[in-house]
Image (tube, rainbow, N blue to C red):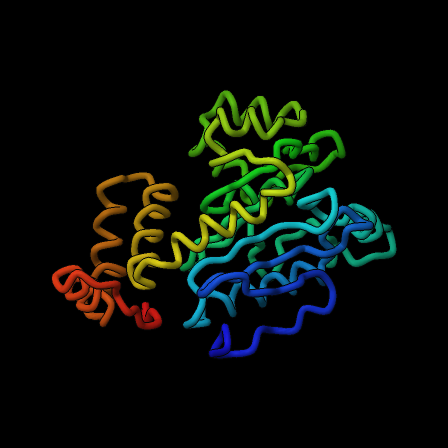
Length: 276
């Protein structure tokens, strides 16, 4: 059986796609000479892949990593600088709110595991903050150096960092612009696990495989409940929203019946593609 039901969008500029395990998509940012910095074209490429991933019925989890010594150095500052020239229409400046939502602001339905193989700076770090699980190489480091370049980390990480690590740590990280090691990020709770560099993708895929063995409907519903709790002010309202939407859809689906039946019959469940 083919790994997907629908073909992926073309990714000629920035991304390499593969399928290392059933229901798992591996996305590799592939501009190693530029430390996987993201041009506008690269961002549009990523936008199309995330939309396809959420709709593709044979995929449940994605892993994202980088080629070479960087996860990603963030936005392409050379392109950003060119877009600030006096003869460029201000509406076309790279820092303007884009028509797409980058990974750092992605809501989506399905979980993403970051395999941070090296430096994660600027928008690359913001990507990591919004991933559902994070595996980091022991020599990886993270930073929001925007304040040192006269810009700001406005891609979505600032409010998310507050929710994850608190005001004081988030302020130290974002206002100083200093680099933070993988071990410190582990202590702060942004990183789930630190492993040797050569094991980082393998370990991230292991997490993804473990998740992907579960009910596709339950994965979507559980992630929705977690995200609602993270993104909304009221914990109880987050529960209500998930009950009213994703859990109600889960109850009408085939996988809840299959999961309970398989448990009663003491066998492995045979999951169907999620329709949530």
